[in-house]
Image (cartoon, rainbow, N blue to C red; front, side):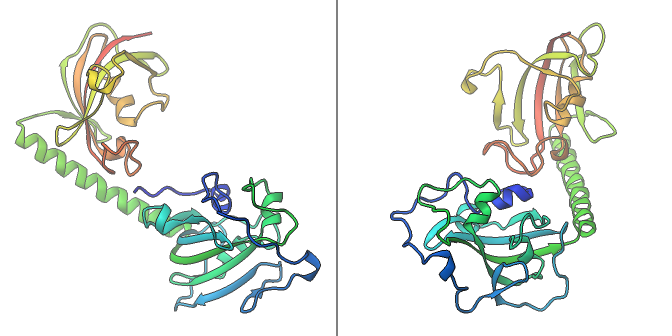
Length: 308
């Protein structure tokens, strides 16, 4: 599964997600707030966050607000599971940027206590999350000292500079891998496409007539998309995909993948060609379909029907 960076709001929503597992029976009522005591084994920060360090791994790079973390997270109230990255995220850690605390006792107060390899449990009052706008499940009761527990195992901690350098190195390696795969494909199929500065390859079989479309113009196209194996994943001319109709979009406005914005602009009205699009100009790691593996180089047969 492709990793998707969570925003601070999305991290908070892990406490009470819309699709949370329903509880068979409501938790037992806890004592009134005046009688509440911190559970045994837990400590409390100066701002009221309850925590227990389960594993203190060697390391000195504590997370800071603005850093990037990857964690396995198990969120629950009592035995009601709200989120479990191992079971509900394909056993992949959750990536996010550490947000500034939004209230006293926020989870962020605990995240900055951790280094890579650490494990900890944090308890955040349900009432505090509800005040921040989280939507409760029917059995969640305000004012009854319910706490959301976050069981966290830290996989990595990176500064913004480290995150940027890693992303750039990964992107460069992917560009090289894509280009090699394309060169091998062209040699195997005896193709000699042209290449743009961005890394897009293309073959124009019919240039069309008149002017090329300009950014902002509405372009209408026919297309068939394939992976390098030749497997089709979408088409508006093949009935098996059940949408045989012209496809229109505003050129150069980011409504389609970058390879399309660049490649379609190379064709005039009536023009036909094939675009060979590296993953960085396509969907990259975030595939929109199980028919498109992450980091896939994509091939599109395209025809510009009209633009205005």
